[in-house]
Image (cartoon, rainbow, N blue to C red; front, side, top):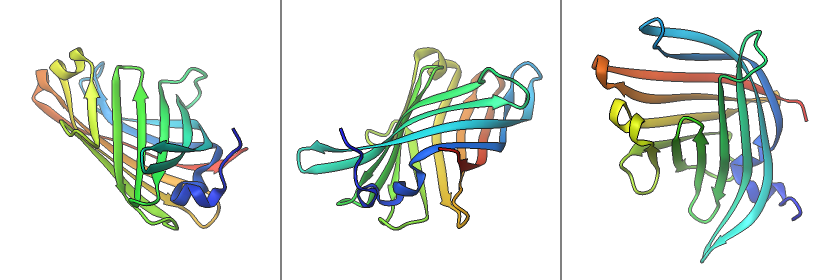
Length: 188
């Protein structure tokens, strides 16, 4: 299938390609230390255009998504994601659908214009549209009530994200604002 015209990808067009960033910062609860800690990281992201995908009268264009994050100085990723970024031009909706290998799926979405250089997507646990699903263990011990991700396309050809996954460590009675942020530069 040939790649779609970039104009069909709306605000996602600027994200298509292979990207790397080495200024990532993960702030999360570290179980081994029993406290919130910071983990600097580098990452690789591939976003390959596809589409159209027709759902009745809805037409989606998107990016096939693969990412891996590595602690500085390590060769094996400590976090990976697979999924899709989607654009529904008629509804003005941008979406990010991804799965992490701990058994959790997120479909986040938000409103954007085709020429937007920044947009935010969100998901809530229990929502039938933009929601979060977890495996039984996570639901019992570490509920994830919400997720947000803000994207900014920078004037220098890079793009940045700032995301927050709120989760509750039930055994500790602790609510954590797990944040990740990085700036990615095109390498292919």
